[in-house]
Length: 383
Image 1 (cartoon, rainbow, N blue to C red):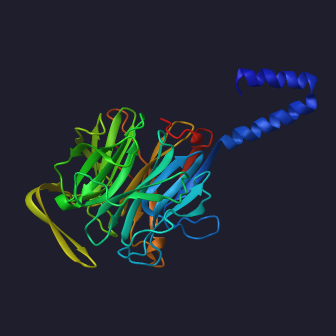
Image 2 (tube, rainbow, N blue to C red):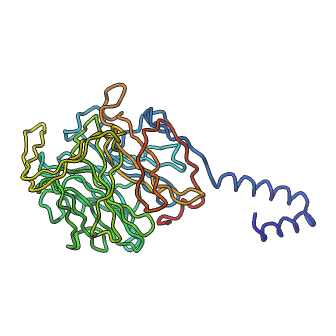
Image 3 (tube, rainbow, N blue to C red):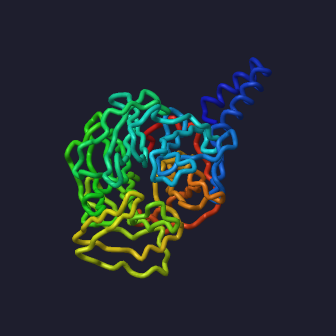
């Protein structure tokens, strides 16, 4: 309690003892509600307030207007390669009690949909959704839609955004502290190499500034900022793979690089050393056939992940001690009942070295607790 509150309490005690007691009770309740400790369970499916398993995969967790929103692809009982995929959002006041808010698109063009990512544009006052979809496998497109509310419905404004890759695959959004947005994705027509593109101020198009990695055979990229450093994470090709993938870590002082390769995480210490390859080709098998892409250079990992999961997001969670960066990944083919929509998600806090800010090795933790600062949750772009 600060000095002003203490003085006010003293005056209330002198002139209105009964009111003073009521004030102190209200203050105590307020302080108690300011923070809440919740347990994150990675060993069982997460459920909403109605007891239903949460079906929201390969998406993101955002904090808008004092609530958390979990966006993802709802697969239900399908294989993931069908036009039955839908985008869905759940909301929560505390990361523990989740409510299904509904589908993002009332109707959507025929195709196969993956990886929805939503950010808020403080210049246009719109919620902006970028997503990866395939009118036919595997000729991917990046679509963009907008809404006045975080739960939608979203209106599609472009089903095929012009990027430096003709067929973008997995992608995700990042908004910097100055409000500039970036889309990082894999170029499926260029050997699955990773790119970062700056977006226009309305977040609806590419501004033309691109950073290209000289590395191939990767997907599920995520870009985030911690302090003055930008971290770019991505994993090996892992199409609904049960084994998961290691995470390649790159860091820079600018979101458009140049990025420096750092030590991988989610990689077992007993894994073999990376192998440098050249003149390689990559073949992706889908339900409608196989597609082969060429790549001139590549460094392949042993793919010995600690956690058998594929990366989807790094969420920034407010706590009394400062923000926690929570790594999120999908554990494909992990559902006890075999239903794809029931596959587990793995959430864990990233740990950073105090000396060089490197990401420390991740652990396969079944349960852990986090104290969420409910007061600071209203700050959308807290540092």
